[in-house]
Length: 123
Image (cartoon, rainbow, N blue to C red; front, side, top):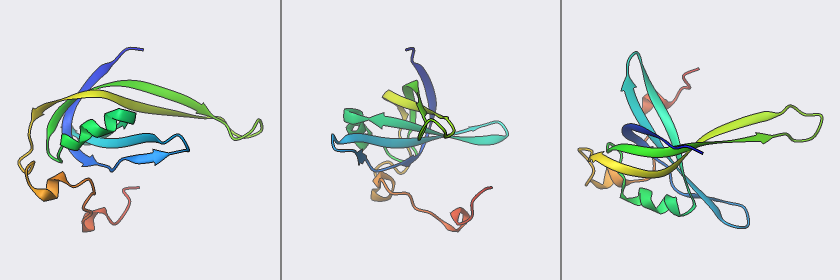
């Protein structure tokens, strides 16, 4: 499996979530890329022990992330529709530039602050 990289500004850092009896852990970091006509929001998943390395990130930081694409197939039963899922699993990151508010308590929070513009869905 080959790895690729992506660079962007940290838009959101979700708290670590645990799943199942074995304690599988996942933490999503969303990168923002303002390239061209539309802004891209790229969710990257930090898995297992990689969740802890995200503790040093802050909203607004510019980072370069190494990732690998992973995919899986899911089907409830033989008669149901087959669905395919694609994820970008982050393996490491490099801090390119610290965000302006990187030292403030507000930017180090793992919770998103939703404003009035986020109350309606874009679709």
